Length: 299
Image (cartoon, rainbow, N blue to C red; front, top):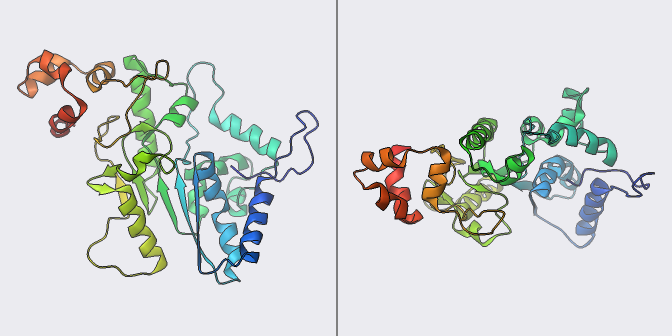
């Protein structure tokens, strides 16, 4: 998360954690190299969380030099939900990391959570304290979030109930965010993958949503209508978006057929087929592209 300030090696691990200091040094190098105008901070996964942690400090550091800062966090919006089985909860990991790194979240967030400053590593606790223009990309069923909750490869109805609960919590946590793009996919990270060009919500692609947001925050007027600031998937079940990255079994690497996925959710295939006027066997043989348009009216 690039939040550490521990420059001396930890006595037990012999590691130093100087992420925040490294970011400060990089900004200084950019200025010495002639940075002017605007800077867009972008990061994915833990780097996405780091973008949120550093956005305001970068804006303050560069403001005197006439540089305007905006931030884009990809898949760094993690939740402090309890874990299944014997996994340590995310909040415990954040607490240990905060101490280990000698972490330094924004002061205003630390003041609000004085007794639990590690909560500031979670986007929904940190977001109210961010003043820099921020665009949040987040899959509603983020696979890293699910893994942290102990649901790595759901197969039973109980496990899928946990997936749905996680997705509902993610959706609720994003409600205050002014600029967000949240497809209902089981995946993690978008901007470093080729799918980022095709992923869409309500017919609006991610590149178009980012371009419209960037145009707004930079004050540039464009021709024609632009995409909404908030694009959050309306359907509530995983992989209901036809542009989602293919879901693969983590054990075999093989693509999971959508019909099999729906059955693992607990879907009554016969009942669903009857509701759509189809034969159950025909439904199970349908491709993802054929199934999604049929299922959309029933979600």
